Image (cartoon, rainbow, N blue to C red; front, side):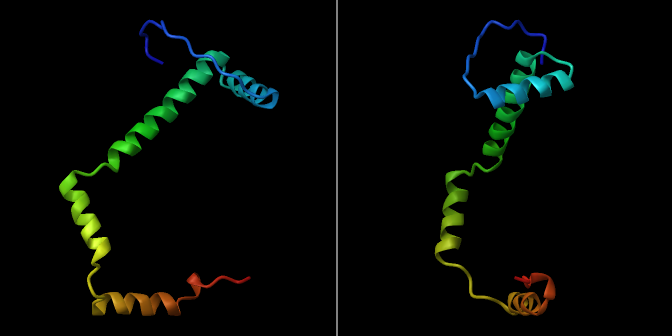
Length: 96
């Protein structure tokens, strides 16, 4: 975590099992439970925010995506060959 002053407080309730797992993980990581929770939550928050930013589209781009979904182009010869190869390939078959 950064060296910024820590002024805010978060509180949460967890099950006994969750608490024990968090404490064990913090101990293995050689950090406090508070630091473990803060770092873990911050990492998850940053991942979610970054993923959200990565998939945002402008209005114009979204309209193009929606148009393509509503009116997909007709399959061309290259697409048909790919589908044929995929249908023939044993990798795609499930053994149940």
